[in-house]
Image 1 (cartoon, one colour):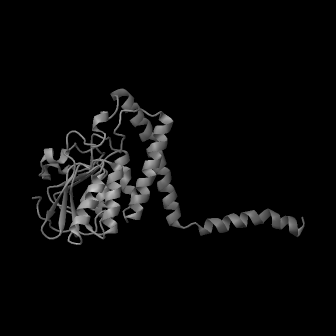
Image 2: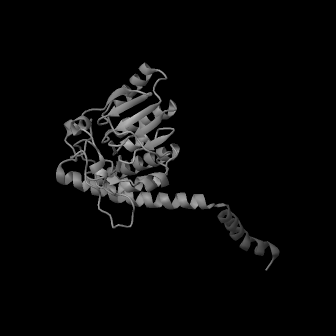
Length: 276
């Protein structure tokens, strides 16, 4: 065998070995998480498609602008007990359900706190922008008490909060569920009261139109990818959203204090004033 032939046999292997050596643990973890996410989203898309066919849509078309779960405080999703999450903090939430079901409203509180209470309807981000423009630099913190709603508006509100270098807060007695934690993630500092509830569940379409299973899967994957990239951008571990993907829309996965810290959803802890 000539030297040239011997070199041809080992060179590809050498190049492959050098390539493997350059793959760090972080890339491996990201690839693994991406594969897990794709699998969960695939199952989710078909489940949602079948559910919407059976029920005629998760929500009537006239409720598309405000996505509110019934009741406002759904039960915790059942777990096998291996996770510290999904405890059930509903008894700690002191809130008026009628207010939460209405479209989000903003109220200026002492100390530069802008309280956002209610469901995130289409147009909430525009109203928040108007409030912040009107208040100038007085607002330092956005306090949240919301069952969630429009995904697009929630992400727009969060980016607005981050661009203005504002803090976010979920005080004792308040609820922040569904798309609300995405708004919360926009804060440059993020604080949750010991007696507040942070809940996650599957995203879903708020219209009665039924896409085919292929389109449902595509839409679900695109949305999951957007949320994962968004959470990473905000400094939150996107693995947190796996709890949302495997929790039915009419239940909530309530994050524990340890999980919120582990996923870097919160940046500070401490006693909080109760919801006024």
